[in-house]
Amino acid sequence: MQSVSRILILLLAGIAALMARDPTGRLFVTNEGDDTVSVIDAKTGDLVRAIDVGGRPRGIGFSPDRTRVYVALGDENAIAVIDTATLAILEKVPAGSDPEAFAVHPNGHIYLSNEDEGEASVLNPENGEILAQIKVGIEPEGVAIGPDGTRVYVTSESTSMVHVISVPEHEVVANILVGARPREIAFSEDGKYGYVTCEVGGEVVKWDLATNKIVQRKKLRREIRLVKPKGIRRGPDGKSFFIATGRGDVVAVLDAETLDLQATIPVGRRVWGMAFSRDGKTLYVTNGLDNNMSVIDVDARKETNKIAVGDMPWGVIFDD
Amino acid sequence: MCLKASLTVAQRTNGTAIVGILEGGLARIRPVTFARTISLALLLTAALSAAEVKIVYVGPPLRDNSSGKGALLGLEEAQLQGAFLGLAYSLAAAELTDLAALHGADAILVAGTPGRVLAVAEAVSEQGVPVFNIAATQDGLRTSCAPNLLHTIPSDAMLATAVAQWKQNSDAGSVVAQAWHEDFVKFAARDLNKRFQESRGTDMDDQSWAAWAAVRIVADAAANLPVGTTAERLAYIRFEMEFDGQKGGYMTFRDTGQLRQPLLVVVDGKLAGEAPVRGVAASDDLDSLDPLVCAAR
Image 1 (cartoon, rainbow over the protein chains, first blue to last red):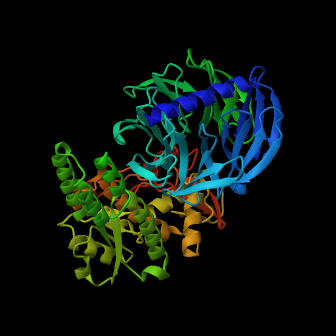
Image 2 (tube, rainbow over the protein chains, first blue to last red):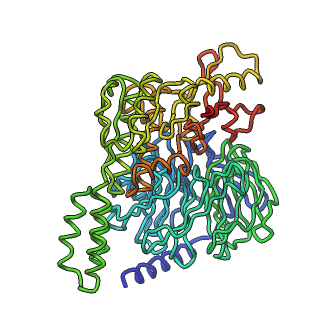
Image 3 (cartoon, rainbow over the protein chains, first blue to last red):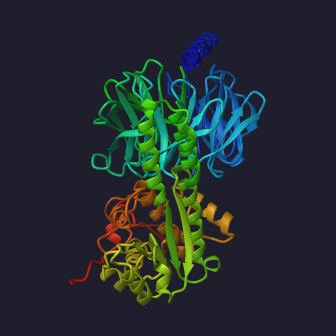
């Protein structure tokens, strides 16, 4: 019952957010190599602005109402808060040591990994309060808010685990040993399964969210040379997952049910961050070693364009 | 619900606490789930009896040298992972001459001469205890192919091959190959260098990396086979494991017991690149660095 009401609250919050403002139609890309955020007009592919955001920007995400862009600044131990419309840097909120990746809960709190400290932190960006610091494994990385908002999942790269954290208690309630160097997490459309990319293991591991047991794993090395799975997003049809394969230099499309490889889409070198358009027709991925971003026609499963961004692009989000 | 709650706690605490909590929880469990809970408790107890992984380190004093410091960082990291899984690790130091101290070990690290490494491997070969050579680079140790002997430190032949690959591509001066370098930042090397420097107060070198890697490999095997026997874990290490040595790709063992790994090339004292050297060999062709095979027996 509690989770039903939670879902309702999340839905209402989502609807309120959608009604609040018109999207800017801009892509925001963090560039780890030159400390900027590239703001791109998605329609023209033109650079609107390169924001000098600060030291080592990697993780990037919107506030629930999308009026703010958050950027993790690893070398500044802070989260930069950018106004989505004016592109002004409003503030830099201290976020503990070396924040890398994060996820924004529908309640507005930022769940982030502090890579150096082996911790996940919960930050209220409104007042800068750190609500909790949770011990996890070594080199925590990917953070994902579970489908009903009562669980947050954090990977620890050098401990090969997914840690399950309860909300709002902020306790580690389970640990799942997965493949080597787990990076990012996505969930099935029905909210029953989690999928985690394992960079060094070269695989995607699927687990049951109710039991926290692994149900399937898919090694991609045989099909994709030099594969290092990093980014993962559920496809717009809900039946597939799109994987950024790092030096595999392709986006892999896996069947959500069987994990069979359905397609590989050649893109640039060291493909990393990913963002779908709201209509699900376009996928944008960053190519870390090419300083650009590939535009993919999702239905055709083909790259249609490349857009220049900054140095060593990492993450991308789309305000559409 | 009660069962679930008990398990939840179990995953977060040490062995003794798990059993206590499960027993404490039994009184509140409905009869239908009782049997299942009991068997689960027994299963957990059985797992726990094998839950301490005993690693013996044979070599110079643990705290005063590169190998020992690497082993200690590896131990701390293994313990951190183990705490999430109900696994504990211990690291006991033994003298190079004290073979009796090896009794009961789940894995052994040796930083010593080839003769000493072979003697240790032989002493525990019947039980299939993995022995890690973490310091000796001599090729002969690899070609002898003792079934329970593994090498995380690269061989002389590998180091020479890496240098030769580099020289094929440039007229560089003083070229040296290494397993590790304190200035290496690519992949997650920066993180490992930072952890070592902060916890041990000195730079990580080849010997400390090899010792760290050996302990982490033992932990990988134990985590994936928590109730496995020593021999099963050795087989896992040799044939299944894909180790994340924080040098980029995954690492596996060759038939010789040598850990496949990229090497770092240092030119005139400065980190210059990695081997396999681009343009000479494919970056994932780790075997291009290792010409050694098992001697015919």
